[in-house]
Length: 86
Image 1 (cartoon, rainbow, N blue to C red):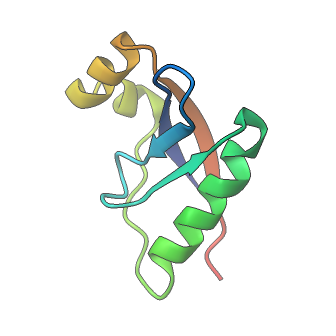
Image 2: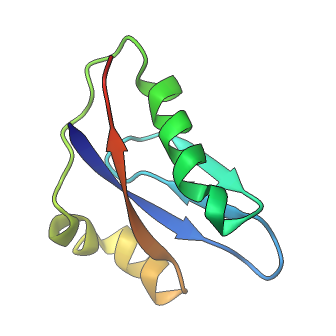
């Protein structure tokens, strides 16, 4: 099983948005924080369906990414999302 790191962000009272630094173009959102993980799993499954999954970096490498550091400085947080290729 592969785990991807997602960057979760929210501005004001808006929905939570997320993107995957290691899976360009894959993003999702949820109105409720409790739905973030399920929506992220679904987004990964749909985005990577029939594709070779990209390499997932460890969390320390993702944290060291300049763009991710900027997101974190603006209040974003990271979640680990398991990916089960079928």
